[in-house]
Amino acid sequence: MNQKDFLYRLECKDKFIRDLIKDPESIFAINKLQKELKAAQ
Image 1 (cartoon, one colour):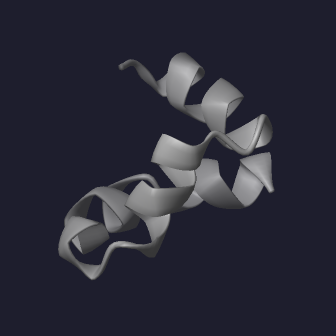
Image 2 (cartoon, rainbow, N blue to C red):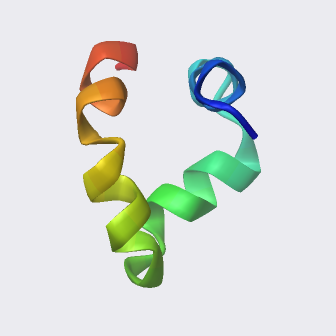
């Protein structure tokens, strides 16, 4: 999944993306995408 797809799915409140964000084991991915997450919210 590329960044554009991720942000689109985040905006649509996709269950997979919401679960990924809430999962403490995915913290590395969240830290890496933190800037994009803030922009999308």
